[in-house]
Structures are given as C-alpha cells and as structure tokens.
Length: 223
Image (cartoon, rainbow, N blue to C red; front, top):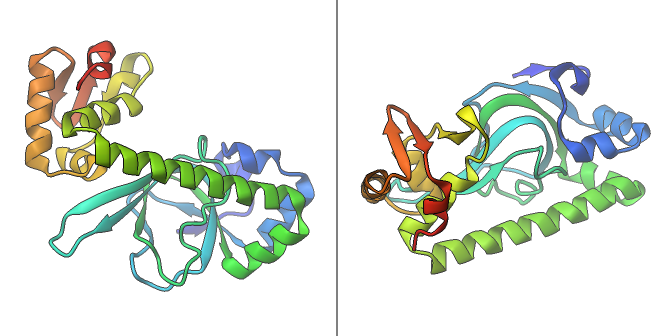
C-alpha cells in the first residue's frame, strides 16, 4: 500500500467525504493515514486486533467470514459511492471478518479513539457516524431477511440484479460461481444449478468468468 497526500489525486467519489467542510477533512487527514490500496489487498484479517475506523474514498471492498469447514459468507459489499460515511465494522476489539479490496482505490485509516474524539467535537463528522450506524443496521437486517426467507434461486436472481443495471457492459457480472455462492449463502454446486436453469430460461448467458444478464424482468419474477 502506498501513502498519498491528497485524496483528490486518486479521484475521491465518496459523497459524504466531499460534503464535509474543509476544516473537517483537514483535521481527519492530519489525525489519520491516507492510503492507496491495490485490488486483492487484505485490509483487515478476521479475528485480529481491530479498534480501527476507515473512510473508503474510492474503490470497492468486500467483508466476509469463513466458517470452520471453510465455507465463506459475504457480509457486505462496500461501495463508497453508495455507503458514504466512515466504516465502523472494525471498531470492536477484534475484526469481524476479512476485509479485502475488490477494485483499487484509497482509504483513510483512523483509530477508534481518534474517530470518537473527533466525532464528539465535529457535528458534521458526528452526523456521518450516526448515519453509518443506521445504514449498516438496515443493510444487515435486510441481508438476514433475504437469507432467512428467500429461496436460493431468488437470492441468486437478486444478486445478479443488484450487480447490474446499466447498458452494454453494465449487464455483465464478473464473479466466479464460488464468489456468488458466498454472497447468497449456499454452495458453488447449488449456484451452478440455479445459473443453468436461469440460462435455460433465457434470463442470463454464461461465459468464462462472466454472467451476462439478458432479461431483467425474468430475474425480478424468480420465486
């Protein structure tokens, strides 16, 4: 990882960061450590000492847990253009899971104590911390409901819809079947059967390392 001096040099897209007054950003940069991160890098390892908050400025990130049998479950896909504020998931005594960089970008690392102190002193930062808590609670409750009440085929269809939505290459999902299985809470073999059925129905087209969504309406009505 390479230290960078100014987030604008790496194309900040985090709207919450951009909404802060200049003095808030200057203070946070002085307290924390700005880093450029490469795709595939492991930012936090499950079970290790934590007590760290970080602002995802650009790029995308993936939080996952691995069970004793080696099965992996994706907990959160973190996109700073949508999530926004500081990520608080690693502020406990131990990291909740592995946090990896999917697409390269930049982050600002802060200790828990630094963030807490500054959030009390700075209303703009304090509001963003509260909003982050609300956002995460909503996300995890929605995810729990999805895993508990929806069949695997529905979860696969929803994951494909969430990952696409644009024209051209925007309809392509570049995920392995193992990654998709970790996201929807099942095995690769079950996902493979679901994808084969969706392709037979004309909803998707399978390729090497890619899934092209052909019929979004079909996916929206999978039950």
